[in-house]
Image (cartoon, rainbow, N blue to C red):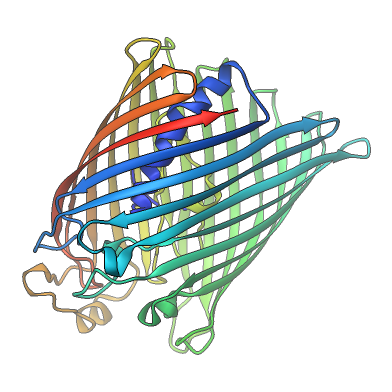
Length: 422
C-alpha cells in the first residue's frame, strides 16, 4: 500500500519490505533472535509505469540485502537495520537503474531512578517515483536523500505522569536541478506531558515548534510551525491497538506576501485482531510539508508499513485513508487486501491557482484539488521459517490538478521471495 512518511520505485522496495514483514518477523514473534540477515528478490510488472495518459509498460527487478539487530542488555536496548538494494528496469534501465540505501538505528537507555533517553537516526536514498516528477517527462533520474536524527528524553518510567522532551533534525535533498526548490532542512523541538491512566492507555498534550528552511531557489524561505499536539496510545489485551496524533498548527512563512495559516493535521493508526485468524488495520493521515510521518514509520498495519506522505509541497495538504486486512488461511498461508484514498488539497487562493495553470495536453485540469485511489490484493506463503513467498496485484487511478498531477490509471503485479538467517 502507498503514502507515503506512496509510492516510489521505492514502491518496489515496499513489496520487499512487505515480504520481510510477512516472513522473518512473523517467525521472530515466535522465536526472536537479536540478529538477522535477509536476502530478497522482487519482480514487478507495471502497466503504466510513467503514470500518464500515454501509459508505458515496465518490468522492474529489485534485489535487497537487509541486516539487523534487536538486543537488550541490562538497562540498554539496541535496534538497527541496514538495507542495500539494486533496482533494474527492463525498458528505462539506461536512465533509471540505481541502488537504494536505508539505514535505521536507535539506542535507548534507562538512567537514574526515573529517566530514559532514546537516540535514533535514519538515512534513506532512493529514486523518486515517476508521478512525483512534475512535468511532461516523468522518466528522469531524480535521487531523493533523507537524513534524520532524533533525541527523546523521558522523566517518569512508572506512575501516572511523565514528561517527554524531543529534539529532531532532518534534511531532505533531491538530485534533479528542477526539484531542488523542495530541498529542506528542518529543526523540531517539543515537550509533552503524558498521563498514564493504566498500563494500556495513555494521553499526551504539549507544544511542538518546527522550523523548515528551503535554501535553494526560494530566497532561503523558512516556515515556522507552532503545534499543539494531543496523543493517545491504547492497547486492549492484544486484540486492538490505537495510536493517535492530532496537531493544531499555526504556520507562518518568511516569504513576502504570504499569509499566516492554520491547519489541523495528524495521524491515526488502528489495528484489530478479533480471533487471531483475521486482522484489520486503519490508517488516516492529514499532513503538510512539515510532516515526516513516512520517514519516522509511525503508522503500520498487519500487512506491513504504509507510506502516506511524500513530496508534499508547501501549498498542499494531503489526506490519506488506508484500509487493510489479513486473513490467516492456514499456519503458512496468508491473504491480504488493502484500499487507499488520498486527497491533495491546495491552500492557495483560487485566483492564484487559476493563474498558475500548467497544461499537459488531455491530462490538464483547472481544479486545485485531486485524488488518488489504490486497491491491492496479496497472497503470502511461508513454507519454512526462513523462507517467505508473496505475490500481489494492484490497481490505481489518479485525477489531474493544476499543480502538475496528471490523470492516469493502471495496474501492476509483483512477486517476491526472501530468505532469512537469524
